[in-house]
Image (cartoon, rainbow, N blue to C red; front, side):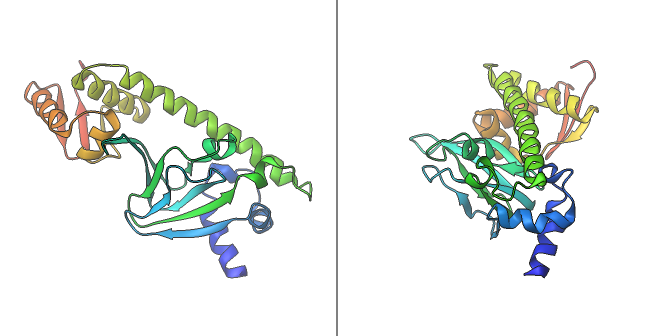
Length: 226
């Protein structure tokens, strides 16, 4: 058990959720929060729409895809969650009855699952590091709210071109560079932008021929005039 705690502590310390919490306290914190490590193969579901919203995860290795599906089975990719980010925390901590998204492994991944009730309920041991964890969660959720607002702004554009360019400009601004990699493959980008893959590919090809962008798989370069 001690070896397991040491392993988890080494991975978890990369997460901002544990910022300011000493490594020596993590073992006690894991016990307090009912932490459980889960290994997922690519494509395996961690959380399914309709399941009880009583836990959330921290990606320790790999990445997870958060998606919704309409009645026809068409997928909307909300976000890719990479180590050491948090997944499903907003829903689990909001008091929602059920999870409204599917969370599946985008690749072989390791996730630390935490029980939401153990966070919102005052710790019996009055742990100082428990209070610090709550503050860190609030900061993390604030960042995710800003990310969601950015996506809403992107999807407010009607055309495939405008959505694509708004997204690419947003990434360029975050990276502070006109040349960058995006975290999506072509299908994932289409799902994220809520457009057809064929229309997206045609738009990328058209903009490339116009000399407005340079694209090679998930690597893009924007001309400064764009």
